[in-house]
Length: 48
Image 1 (cartoon, rainbow, N blue to C red):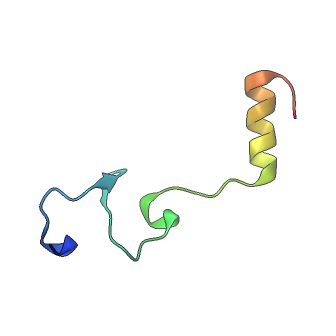
Image 2 (image 1 turned 180 degrees about the vertical axis):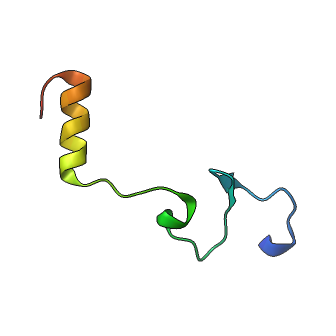
């Protein structure tokens, strides 16, 4: 079966997934180490 022939293809954030997509195409951004540190500090009150 060819993926392009499927109906009801999977989506993320309302964007239909295709094989040549990048995370940015579906509204997902990469997290920097600084962003992860900030989330840990806000969530757990400590940084590991």
